Image 1 (cartoon, one colour):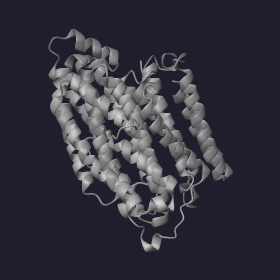
Image 2: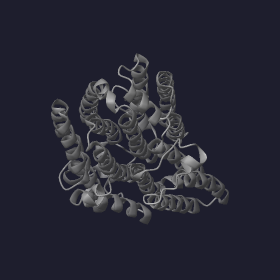
Image 3: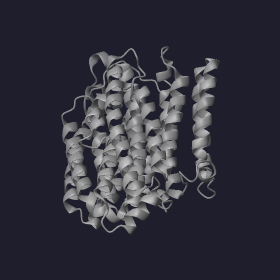
Image 4: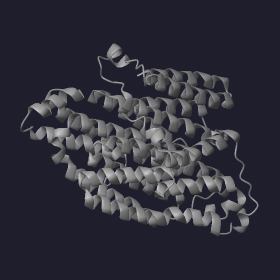
Length: 466
């Protein structure tokens, strides 16, 4: 709970630092604030400061699982912030507000992985969602950004309504908002009321929308494509990690006895998501739009881990969220540099990148290999762990489909690698030199090294999972 307190205070402090009109100070302060919060979160690993019981009657809890998810969220944000250095050079940008909103959105994300009461889950979802609505439309001079914000807001509002209605139905059926109260009702009742099942269905629909799972994914390509790339990277990683952590906690804590009710539905949704995400990504010419559909497909893999619902599920979700976030931050980081120079977000913008900037080409190559699930990368072990959990649960048909869709994913991920190493750059881009700042290099180097490190020595992370 200390992370929530610090992020709230630091977010307000960042707004006041905006009066200094010094963008470099704002950047450094945002990095320092995230680093301090990350360290404070690690301190809670052994000595949790349970502000939840002190302030809000145990509506949130701190355990090792929530600390690990919070570490992934904060670590991802810490790696994304350095990518903003080029972006905030825009005179129209408002870095003080952007950094503050990012910090406040992390408050919502941490609440989503630490909640004990459905009301706190709702507050966390809304804090994160409202921040994303604003950031999606941050580039006010860009019609695509305005369209992305409007689509995200309108469709998100409907999903929130469904989600809140589901919470109301669960309360009507169980008389409790707390996970423990709902668990007691489900365990003690031989035949739960239809209202309970209906409420669970509506809550899951609202959560599946937030993590862009098919058939609730229609907003994702346009919103990811139209939003500023920096904030797209934030949406594709932070929102997805928090959403799946919250969903798994709800199902594992309160609805384990009703597994047979929701297992088949989530299996079908996971299969549909894998097919839609991977097959549609094949036809994209825009790299950024491809990454949008790629994020949908990865939501399918994570949902498969949730559906497997066994001893490996939690570790699979944690490790896959980490590996996916590292590779996605790398990919979007390289895209931001290349598109800023080439003024193009299509695959062709990467033509000849290996000759122009070998470092960026290597970073992008490792990111694509990890997303594709190639051995010796963290992404391979993440997928392998999910497949093992699905196999042990007996979800053979979904596992086979997921393996086939992974093969499809090789096509659109390797298109980028082929463009960088085997194609010549366009004549007009031949002499363009892509400059990379020191913080930017540090972030990309760290994401790349961690992708390789966890691919070679996964026990460094698995050993922490309770």
